[in-house]
Length: 167
Image (cartoon, rainbow, N blue to C red; front, side, top):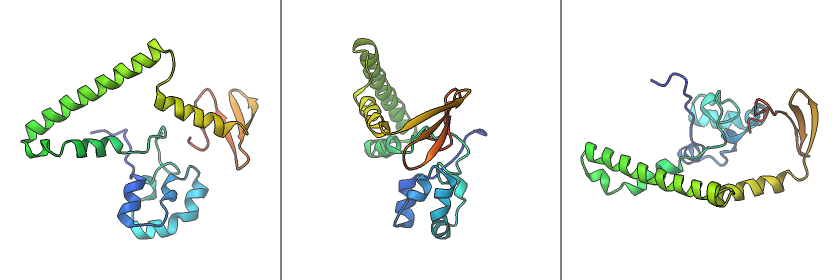
């Protein structure tokens, strides 16, 4: 049905399901980081590493690696689950509409009234700014930059909005 979509495992659920000591393998951005820890995890799960996020993922994750909305809806609908399937679907539709409406109103308030980011986005941006203060970026032409963070170097394609670390 969705031929262009990609499926990936949730790192938290992978971690909980196999009771691994460390689920950082599936969070690795670079393939060499991924390969460092792959053998034990692959042996434990017997699954395809292309479904473990970031390093081998064929799509773009946009750093959204959570299933919080699903978990929240599951917990929130515990009473509606006793209803018929049609009733349950109507509940989900109504709840989602209300949830998105509130989020839209909040976003409009912050962008139109205060001309700033939402508090959540502001914190995220601030953390990134603090983290990147020691980084250096060298223009290497045609919208490409070499970014050095003291730990590793990366090529960033400004116009394509891509980075070799997929971040």
